[in-house]
Image (cartoon, rainbow, N blue to C red; front, side, top):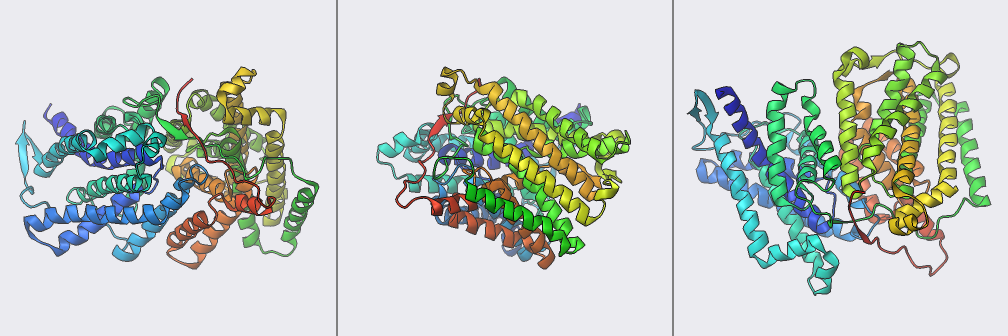
Length: 626
């Protein structure tokens, strides 16, 4: 009993820090509708700044003052970023704020290494709280008890701010209906800035409070943001009280999961999130009327099949690529084959985001399933390359068909987070089922057929798959099914009134996208000769999102351009500098500011007739379940 009490209190202490970060993320999304991927980076920055300040100022006042000052510094940085970057793209295509904040995250990861070094940093103990308190024979750190008390105190302070101040009332009103708040004469710009600064302050404070408890490292941002997203979604977007309850749930699952469910402990929180979203799609304390801009974005002009001139241009590009193996070396052909594979992967995600209006945060699941399907078919069944590729496609389709039954019931961020939960579940199976998948050691020796074993042969094969795959997806967009899918995206009620059912139409698109991603994953397995669990991981999903957003969500084939630019730039920077993420993140942010509709979207606008009106701003819609 005493051991379980100690474990429970440890979980509560972790819940307090997690609540601070998650409540800030909830406030930011509730008011601004920004999916702030950089929130974990702000928490990490708060920890690093607090470490530096506590090393410089001694004594109790110096320590505690340093923690608060670190949070204020991070809040000031957040406010500056909101005014200089995010404010410029509030009315850009949906999720472009996600792309900008992802670029900021990349920059932060290398910036902290550049400033503080790559080693883990251990902060000082909190003055007056360096000892432990005996409870039922167990020594409970005094600092853990302080953190346990800190959580409810912050929750109470936030409740007073949100319910007893004019600022808080405006924040809650903006969460419910931003357009009405603007109609009442409230300056939305400064309201958004204040909300963003408050959310970042909480994230910075949550990170700063961790330095006496955990080592500070440059990889903590991803872990923090993933757990914070899980908490916010379980509790309900925009609900601070929900974030508190969900923080306790997630922290206790982490504390006891390794004891009660060791085989699924690393993904237990995602299992709970998936269950909550399936049963109550808007979270434990969320509301049905929570609004979010649709993921669908209209292009600068109506979509139309490719013109004759466009077909000739594309054919010319394909011919040039087909001739590339005659002049390029093996290294560049291998890089080119990888770019072609990720282009097909990004195109499959583009089908969901542009045509279906569904932003998936877990599309790597089907890429990874395709890779494992092909590898297992080769290793366990002894199949040759082409039949193994078919198995990879089948694995991607099967996974998408199963997960899609639950995912397409939702919309907006809830849909995105449920796809992320299923992707993490698939990742945990690949990571822990060592007897079949090889676990962290992966599956090795997945070699292509003899005719594709050379870099030249595999490049031509990858080019053929990419051309046929992207062409098939594009044809689907302009087929009767594609028009029906866009009708569902633009107006669910109108489409259902004319007999186009939203659920099954989007489910079919989900399955098709999963199959195309499975083909890309199967190709990737043969390109690398191996498969590891990171093929299903969060970074792979994020890369897909970045490629689509960079090319342009409001375009049909922007993902191909985005994939080429992003992957080529990533590979080149890694070979040129140790701080490739810093430069790549800066380039992404710069591209977002310069081309807020994506690279292809920008070119489409330039080609539009002079004086043609730009795309209408996305209208808010209700995030609900069917």
